[in-house]
Image (cartoon, rainbow over all chains, first blue to last red; front, side, top):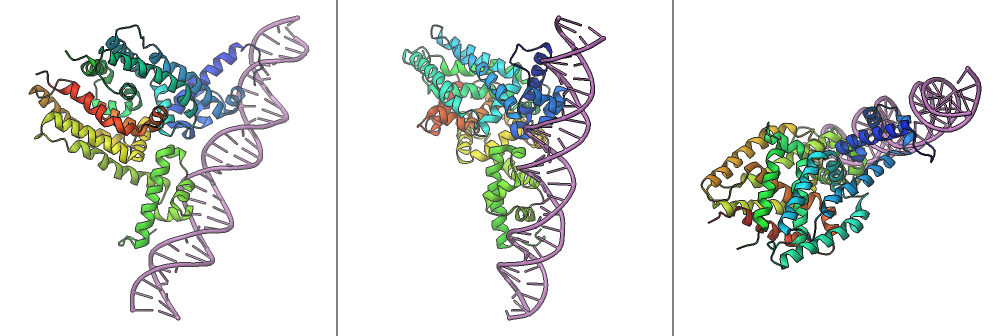
Amino acid sequence: MPADRAPTRIQKKNRAAILEAALDVFSSHGFRGSTVDQIAKAAGLSKPNLLYYFPSKEAMFNELMAGLLDTWLDPLRGLDPEGEPLEEILAYVQRKLQMSRDYPRESRLYANEIVQGAPRLREVIATDLKVLVEEKAQLLQDWMDAGRINRAHPQHLLFSIWSLTQHYADFDAQVRTLMGEEDPFDAAPEYLETLYRRMLTPKS
Amino acid sequence: MPADRAPTRIQKKNRAAILEAALDVFSSHGFRGSTVDQIAKAAGLSKPNLLYYFPSKEAMFNELMAGLLDTWLDPLRGLDPEGEPLEEILAYVQRKLQMSRDYPRESRLYANEIVQGAPRLREVIATDLKVLVEEKAQLLQDWMDAGRINRAHPQHLLFSIWSLTQHYADFDAQVRTLMGEEDPFDAAPEYLETLYRRMLTPKS
DNA sequence: CATTGATTTGACCAACTGGTCAAACTCACG
DNA sequence: CGTGAGTTTGACCAGTTGGTCAAATCAATG
């Protein structure tokens, strides 16, 4: 393993290549379904060489996960209490949709983990994410109480945003097969904007 | 392997127990992540005994998948061209939500497969499901053209229903962690009804 | 209750997998 | 251009996994 010194040029390049390859493999086969050899081949390195940079398969996975969560929560953090409620929410939806388009592998990696019971993420979900969700659910509730958006269960509202946007990344294989030539991301932004606008625009 | 004769009492019981166990194991670990031994233990049988009833691990998986798809498409088939459009759609949403509540393992099994690129389902999706979706999308389009429901991209509308309802099964681990004591299925039916009612109720 | 087919299992195997290690190779630097 | 640290790899290992098989056990039928 490389010393605790500043990483050399080679270390930087290889660690990045490995994480890139690992993301590819883990996101399409899950943790158990992926082999170190697969990742090595995808990274263009030998298996022992991978294990020179990362102590184990799990270490690669954990590093990916750690990096993922921050990126993942960022769009929600951006929900601004000072902004115009409906526009804030619509912007959040679009940011989240954009992430499904730009980082589908990250989305699938996350989905794989949660579908299988979130064994390695329970902790962070129960702490960091929960706090953030409670804060933002309260913000939504305040907006509703002030009559600035229509009423709806705040947490379910958040779930629905995650669900609808991530669907385009996680179920990409199904969505694309069913839509044929048409790119799902052509119509998705407008569809979701319409949906949430109709749902949340205050009556009268 | 049992002969081609009518299944004996024991065969019926054991095959059912195996499929039940396989559903449990496959849906929580994915295909690669599951071992025959795990399934055997869950079914209360020995590994060679499992392989006496099914020629391979894949055979168990395929039989589960085959049975799954029919059940899965049924609620959509029930969308009745003769019914009142909005109520038909709302009823479909509730049927689908009910399936997430009653058959979460089936939902996760399906999700696992699609997230990983649908290697074993491409075919059926591209044929059976596609035909059904095109038929129902046309029905929705007709309803919109007739001004009986608000306009929205029909296929995305279907995707959104799948996404929102299956989310409660597929992301159960996350949803329950974030909701604490409250059962997600308490508020979900009303939330989804409100959502689609506001979105689709024609503008007078 | 004997016999035959159905059912069950312990022992086993070959392939695969995550991980180790010593030896070889490469590279930056004095 | 020599040298030591950084990098790479072939060979290897132990544990796991899907699957086989012959022998043992069980159940139904005459």
